[in-house]
Length: 104
Image (cartoon, rainbow, N blue to C red):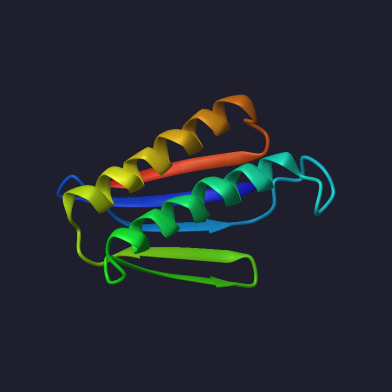
């Protein structure tokens, strides 16, 4: 299962972590993993295209982290859109993806 954890504070997404494998199909043919990757990488690329210093990310051994550095309106809007898309995916593949959000 892919586990996605999102941490929000002061109405802004501050942190995202993604780990695991959906196990919907074998590696390289898993549409759930592909969908998560596409959603997340597209979001990161859009944020960095607008402002290269708006966020930091790392992807090590199947564990992806995103840190919202600038916490501006556009960056947060893109992260909220990513969250909404991941929730929609979770509705379709409940056994393969879990999205959790912590609000402080």
